Image (cartoon, rainbow, N blue to C red; front, side):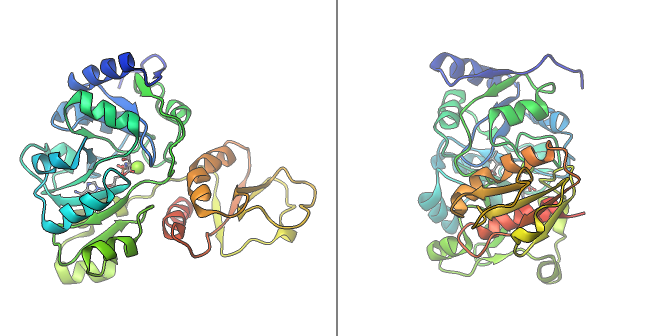
Length: 337
Ligand code: TXA
Ligand code: MG
């Protein structure tokens, strides 16, 4: 792919949104803010536009894209809904929930990586919603990071990673949630599977569906459905969200260990008591340990530590709480060898 000049960052003015919508309609890529993480969007109905997403990110063709809609009423254009999906859509859209359903013929194979299913969501970020409405087409968008690196939660993160591979970035401020959407597989509504934990939890989904939502697990699934991981949860085959600096996880970090130079220590909440000198390698996600704040800052902090010249990052897992599964999933993937 030819090296482009550095991407332009657009403010969300009416004029800029109209211009970016027109570019999307003609097959160009635009990085967009969402409430979860920034996405790299293209016309989901245009196979060659979507192919550009894969080459800009260096993403393997086996990893399908999420299709974003302006409204739940458009769902049947891209997917074949069932009653459970409609119930979840009504409750959680617009918002950080992605639903996997059988796809319609309008979705090109490149978007679904050749699978007969498609992942769909209606995002909540006001600028992205306006852009979707103006463009008048569904937009396929994975996270706007080079494949395998930490997802971006600001326009500056997108520019750092893809600034020379893409031309247009819409700036919508820092992502309010900071972790990618929850993904639920509802191809078989009697057997919903959680493919990726996110801000919307299993128990919230179960309350609406009235059935158990089991996290996808390779061991259980493959034997009883005779489908491969690649067919059910292609994203799980792939290492993700990784800083270049080795990351070591701990159930609980203790302050007495923090003094070692060249190693960073990342706490969930600000450690109590006086922090011994040196303090320049002690960090925390949220001063009071609020997991919403921790989730919102996690990727930005990992990026900062990755750029900080440390040899190792020690990070503490989040204690039980609504967002703990999602935060710890990202930490475990980031630490995976
Ligand atoms: O919050 C989000 O979901 C963000 C924003 C931009 O919307 N997007 C995002 O996309 O995180 P991405 O591509 O980084 O992650 C999408 C995940 C991948 O793991 C992919 O394998 C899975 O969704 N996925 C997509 N289509 C699927 C399908 N048909 N069946 C199962 N998994 C699918
Ligand atoms: Mg991603």
